[in-house]
Image (cartoon, rainbow, N blue to C red):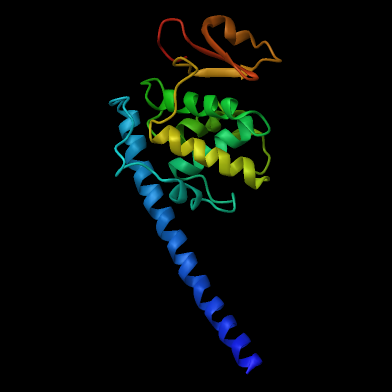
Length: 206
């Protein structure tokens, strides 16, 4: 009788695994589809108001995307979250949010590409990447689960237009421990955490 009960529990557990996997896959698909629509609206520089609830990406949906941190960078959530993660992991959440602000500001600016992934990967063809982690020759897979979960949540808020822009419209940034020569050509907009932010003096991207 005891063995029969164990066998029954094991069978139910094994049956539940495919159901859970299917549910996660469905959430991932919904999140990626919503993100595609939202990045298109952001690229058109439409209303800054928060996205209606029915169109917004939910927390369970965003966490279902790229669960292992090893997926190809070919959807808006993964590209944005991975950029937030690699540019600001180990820093405070405000630093991570500010990186998301810059990506989204570029997406809505005519001087940059019109998809999140294209913004993140810009310059890779000439090895002069706008986001250095994309061209550093190192593996891009996630190494820490908790910071990446945080990065995905910040990406969700950014795409949903629920993230305040503390950078004041910045399109560029650098670590405050360095003083790049290019910074003199831009207008300083904010210092957030360990980063310093800028936008073009004349409004045009360079």
